[in-house]
Length: 402
Image (cartoon, rainbow, N blue to C red; front, top):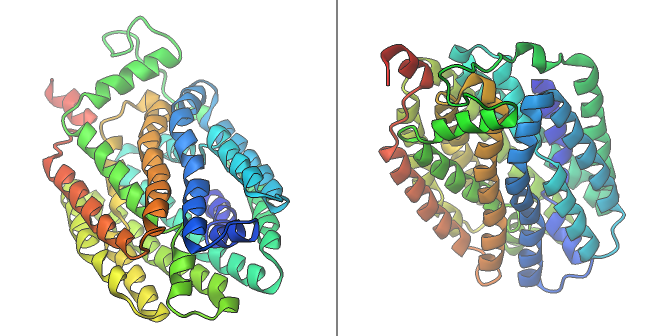
């Protein structure tokens, strides 16, 4: 499954470093308009996915998480092919929207992974998943930038789609059906007593959401995702503004994204393993402190190499925040409702993923560097929420009583 996630994000991230350039090719005007439209394009998919992920999570609890991952990969591959054939920005917008409605890959992949993983290894498993994601992000943008600079922007979309379809084949033939690992929900004395099907899972999720600190963790997920996705609509334009030669902008933007992803993958893997031995909340607070301090230097870089260095250090020291936040939340979610739980948790993150490009794209139309000041503030807000979080693992409650 980690291999599937790597392949999928390899293909998904062909789009990210070149989308602002493609928006300009399809008719956007100056840099400010391109940044705004790119933010809309990058934000619409996670915005819609935020509303539809809970639905797909409930469907996954009933019919299998593997099937939902297959569905989302097919949609992504087909939409990416059609994006490469788009003739205007309206068509591109509608295709990005369709990915949001019918996607949900990440939440279902997380639900699948924690379903087949022993509870005491969940943090390490989620760290592995994020590292696999980042592995795809490392390779995808580099390949996309190379193809875009040496062939065409459209060719990069077709290359990404081919990779996604390969991942679908690996998923279909080399992974087991997760339904045989899923426990049957208890009907007596549980949060879902008297309810069947998806209502039971949603009831158990509602009970988990009322646990101390759970809302705080969702706030952390939201804010960290806003920051993480804010770079998409501005990085190629920021690279260009730093004096990069026009025929190397796509390649250099891909390099920035890829090296940051290397750092994030290392961070996620390390904190996932550390979380087995050390308090997860303490590790989360440490990564958020680092994020707050390291966003500001990005606003003061004066060359592409300085940008590469600053962005890489940010990923290395703060990149494990999402893994740790999901680990805290996972500890409080009933085992039979992982699909519904991660659907809703993913919705919170997806709302952040949508707001990040939309808000920062609009802000960067005024000043590209202002984005990094706002990101430092958002990390500080996430830090404040993490300090207040007092998540009590569900299995500890079962042992010690209410």
